[in-house]
Every structure is written in C-alpha cells, then in structure tokens.
Length: 286
Image (cartoon, rainbow, N blue to C red; front, side):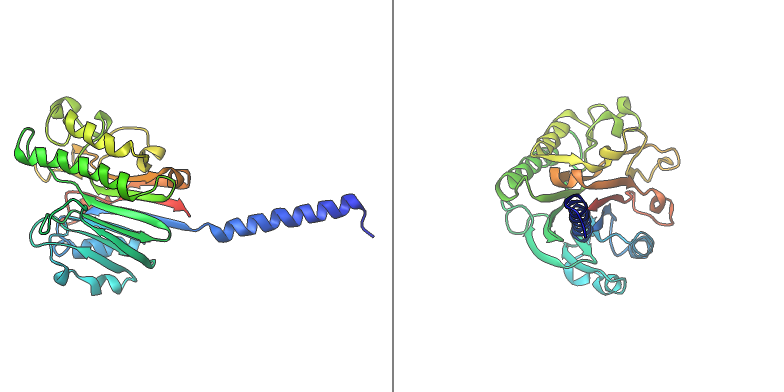
C-alpha cells in the first residue's frame, strides 16, 4: 500500500513528466533564412546548393529579378520547397520558399502601393508565424528623389505594421533592408559616414520600424563587429571583409524569446559567380 506522501510523489512526478512531454510535442525547431540572391535565375545553382546543405524550413529571397511565370518553382520543388513569388522583370522581386505548409499569403506589396508599383514586399503565414519579406529601396544617393522614396517607403512600412500586425503574435520582418543600423555594422564607419545605406535619416526611419516591437535576432547572439552580409563586387571587398550588415532578420518579442541561434553564413559569397549578399539565418523553438 502507498502512503499519502508516496502517492503525492508519484502523481507529482507524473504531472511533471506530462508537462515536459506536452512541451516537447508543442515545440518545434524552425530554421528561417533570408538572402538577396541578385537574380534567382543567374544564381539558381548556388541557391539549390545552399538549400541542400543548410536545409532551412523557410528561405526568403530578394532581388529575384524575374516574373512569376519564369520563377524556377520545379527546381525548388525537387528539394521539397513550395514557392510563393512576387516578381517583375530585371529589377526587384521577392519570394518565399518553404518546406512547411503555407497557411495563407496575406500581402503582396504595401496596401498603400499603387497598381504597378515596384514589387518589394511579400507577407505570408507559415507555422503560426507571419513572415514579412522585404526588399527595401536602395535610395541611390543621399538627397535624390530615390532617397526620398526610400524614406517614405520605410514610413509606410511602419504604418503597415501598425495597421495590420499584432505585437503579441509571432512576426518576422526579414530581407534586404539596405540600411546598416549602427556603426558596428559597417567595416569603416568614417568612410561611410553620411553616405547612402548609412545616413542618419535612413537609420532613424529604420529605427521607427523596429520600435513597433521588433528585435534584431542576429544581435541577440552576436555582439561584435566585423560581421557583414553584403560586400561590393569591386576592389576585393569580400577578400578584405570590407562589407556592411544590411540584411536582417527581425522578430517580435515572442520569437525573440524562442530564438536559439542566429548567424550570417558567409560561405556562398566565396562561391563562383555569387550574389554580393549572403544568407542570414535564425533558429527558433515554436
């Protein structure tokens, strides 16, 4: 016969085991990545090679530079990925590849965009996460019309988050932001001071987006400098590590708490005929 204390110990252990079992069932490791591929057609062998080795659950692409009808969906399907695309000829374009089911595709471009606008945003829900994949305008040069367009686009992106997304939900904002948020994200801060990608108005505009309630997943796990995601093709920039960190994976509070790791995978930048960007990756327990 069991005494009261023995029964309490028995049931207590059972309850703890049940809770641990429920937690193990509830949590799933999900790997998310973002990569400006600078033409998905030109870079297709490299993207396939990286996917086969890295096996992210979700890969967000920017600068796909191809219309939806020409996007190589079959090649990605052979690796187990479904593709949702939003592209245009020659410039811009975004896509999301996923080995997990898409719940829905919510937005193609910002709600404020006119028909025929540059294709820069694709938002979808996967595994309970709303993933917003963006290719922020480059801006060309400080003070130009394209620069002012970039600042306005970032302002509209913040409005989009305010009006359409919930802070207590699983939300990811990722892509090529075309802004190095801090001097630590720049190989030579004095050289880039006030220039495009590093000017204070750009940084302030991007900080306003982040202030919605987003956390830089990379900075949760990497505090140092000299870690970049983009290197110019010219002047041996990659060999000299003369780069910028302008590709980002930002997450809402609930995902920040479950972020196990985040890193920049520099290997593809050293491959033959690479993109000038390289993948940024995060792992999460969902």
